Image 1 (cartoon, rainbow, N blue to C red):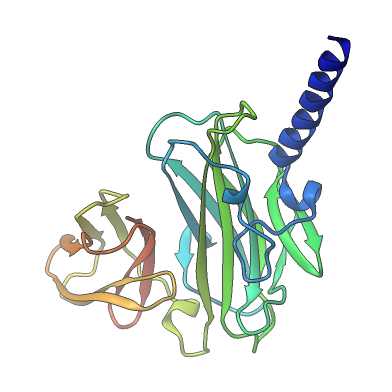
Image 2 (image 1 turned 90 degrees about the vertical axis):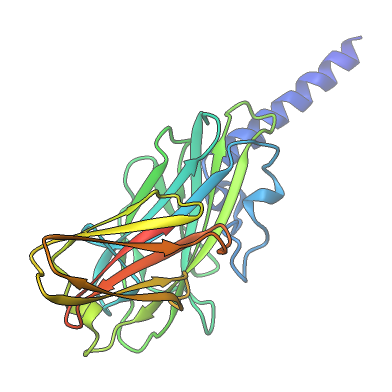
Length: 277
C-alpha cells in the first residue's frame, strides 16, 4: 500500500512539473520550437489536445494600429498574436512565435523587450517570443524590428493554445504561418496609408464578408483585394466611392478556415485589415 501511494505521489509530482513547465513556455522550459516551423521539433498539438474550444489564430504585424503585409527594413513594428475561442470558455491562453528568413530559416529581425507575462528565448541562434505564464488575456503583443535591406521575404510562424488549466488535457491548439515581403522604395504600403476607416464584418466570416469603407474620398476609384497569408490575390473588386461611406461584399464560403487580408487602395494609398474565416 505504501509503495503504491509513493508511486502515485511521484507520478503526480512529475505530471505537475511538466504541466507547469508547459504553461510557462516551451522554449524556456523544454528548449523546443513548437511553432510548426520547418526547423521545429514539433507543434503544440503534439502534446496538447482533446479540447473543444475550436480556436482561431490571428497573427498581424502592426505599424501603429494598421496591419501590414510588407516591412520597411530597420523599422520597428508590433507583432500581435490573438487566440479566439469560438466555443466554450478557456481558462487561459499561450503562444510561441518566431520570424524566419524563408530562404535559410535563419532568424529575421529582432524582438524587443517582452511585456509582462511574456519572454524572448534564443534557441540555436533564433529568437522565440512566448508566454512566461498562462495568460487570461487572449491577445499578445511584442515589439519586432525588421532586418536590414536585402533580407527579402520573411515568414512569421506562430502557435497558439486555448487551455482549460486542469493539466489533464482538454486544450485546443492552432498554428499559422504568415508571409512578410520586403517593401521596395516605390511601394505604396511602405510609406502611405489610405485615410479611411475600414470595417469587415462578420469577422470571423462563414459565407460572406461585408467591407465597409468610410472616409473623405468622394469620386475615388477604389480597388478591394482579398489576399491569403502569402499575399496572393484571391478576389479583386472595383468600387466607386461616391459618398462618405461605401460597402462591398466578398464571397468567402469556398475558402478554407484561416486568416486572410482585405486590402483597399485608391491607386496612391493603401490600407489592410485582417479577416478570419
